[in-house]
Image (tube, rainbow, N blue to C red; front, side):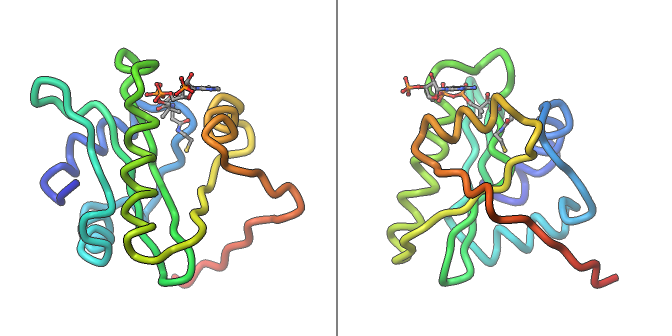
Length: 133
Ligand SMILES: CC(C)(COP(=O)(O)OP(=O)(O)OC[C@H]1O[C@@H](n2cnc3c(N)ncnc32)[C@H](O)[C@@H]1OP(=O)(O)O)[C@@H](O)C(=O)NCCC(=O)NCCS
């Protein structure tokens, strides 16, 4: 994925159920994320059209995948798994040993997908955030 993919990626994210979008997803922020994590994020294309995305980065200790999405009409064909595999392979190359994801609790289908791929849920952990603005 490169910064030029942003407009079509954003359109996919906006059309995707279970996708939490916010100020962090501006074009400038996504471009900065890609620049900090070169080669780790990926798009899937079908006939030149963007049909899937995965943002992936790390902080040297843990990797994280964000915004895994496959356009509805292209699901069930292995694209989601291929995007995740790409991200995990990149994190392994960088020496990472664990990858986190954040899934909205009510996204049951998404949670089942991650579980199917071997991601373990930690129900005893609560995500806390502090607004810096
Ligand atoms: C989740 C999502 C990315 C899956 O994409 P996809 O291209 O349909 O997935 P794949 O075809 O690669 O499926 C990979 C495997 O997961 C399984 N799978 C897919 N969706 C599943 C689900 N909801 N529950 C359980 N297993 C599921 C497939 O059967 C397949 O199994 P296999 O490889 O062992 O045969 C897609 O449904 C999507 O974009 N959902 C909306 C956004 C979302 O919820 N993202 C994840 C949370 S952040």
